[in-house]
Image (cartoon, rainbow, N blue to C red; front, side, top):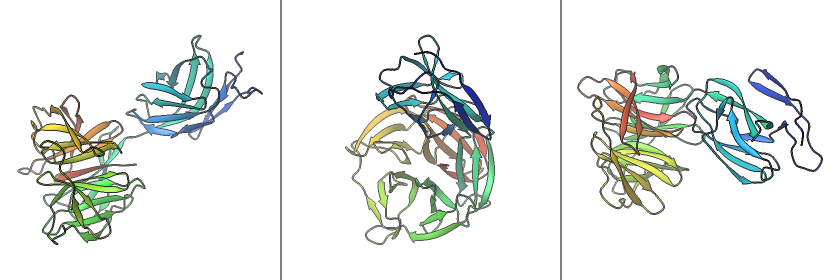
Length: 337
């Protein structure tokens, strides 16, 4: 199998690759990957990328590169599928390349790095009801628009729609337009006895909207009626009220104060596994959690000064790092899909 010539053109974030292929179904050096899923990921890396092609089990693959950086891990699933994890990279278009032991080009495909962004919003202590979008490359909160309701928590559904819980005498579920920031009340959050429920953090587990109460209970919320169903408590005491879902099989739970132990929660078995306590010399409280692109993010709100801070958390080590100051009164965070 001999190397073929490759001409790579980068134009308007589209990578076109000229190559030749084999007639026996196995790719020649320089063939283009059939598909890259997804074709973009954040600059922080950690995105699971699926490469589709042919002949993967027979190719002498030695390394997978995103630009000049090797993938953080990769595995050949079958003859047509490779799973790999993107490394951190700069904004813009790049090329995924598969190389052999002689550093010869095997396959190529287009990939694009985009900014990692989060949505944040404030509760009753905030001077406005604005929704902000935080670009974690520039670390600057950009105004999206007024929600019209103070909110204690935010969550992003897999279609990109935002939901929040109203902060105030009424605890209503709010649907928020992520492009305009405008919110509309859906229903009062109440239990089977028609009593309001104090939801402090939200997270989507697939299509299910989960929440944690101020007391740390885990609940499921009917997004049409607002009815809150209390789920069986995890094994062992788990402080509240933070919750964030990593995937369909694992969530992270955290208490309201630094020093509380963090837990991994496995919904299928309802087991809660203790993680190291969160430690920080600067941070005292955590008001909400979000898992995004391999990292847990949180918000600290100082109720005395209304100062807010975006945090980055390593749940498996227990370290808490300050990312950037936020507008005053911010206490809710969710990911931007």
